[in-house]
Structure formats: C-alpha cells, structure tokens
Length: 100
Image 1: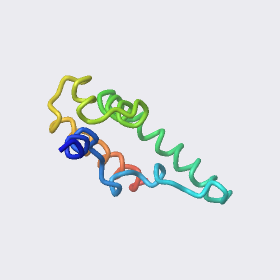
Image 2 (image 1 turned 180 degrees about the vertical axis):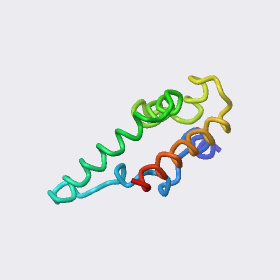
Image 3 (image 1 turned 120 degrees about the vertical axis):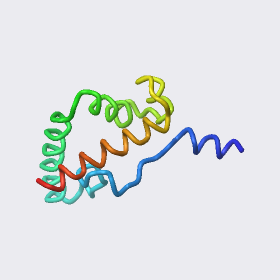
C-alpha cells in the first residue's frame, strides 16, 4: 500500500513528450555535447515564448522538482487538472521544438 501511495504522489511524465534536448547524452562525445548546447538554446527560446503560467508549471516540475500534487497545491488546481496541464504544456513544447 505504501508503494502505491508513493507512486501516486510521484507522477511521472511519458518520456516521449520530453524534447530531445532534455534527454541524456554522452558528454564525452564533443560533437554530441555541442549539438546538445544548440538544442538547449533552442529549447530555452521556446520556453521563454510560452505563457507565464506554463513556464511556472515547468519550473515547478523540473527546476524545483515538485511532484504533481505539490504543483497542484502551489497553483491552486486539482491534481488531475494539473497533470493534464503539464502534459499538454510538454506536448506543445515538443511540437514546437520538432517543428523548428
């Protein structure tokens, strides 16, 4: 039971919706590291272009490393609505990233 509660509390996001720039790369490969820096610059520009509310949710999840329930408490929304909002925001970001 404790494991189930922990899983519900630490909701994850599907790997497929995470932009390539955020996926791991072998840092000993200099070409891959340079490409990653370029990708991160592109991703940074795309994140900056998002609405402030979407940037906040991403910052809470990835910079502050909050769980979905914690984010929901911060932004004053239900957990399921927060989970969907985060997933849609990541999906939008991935689409824009892939379109460039």
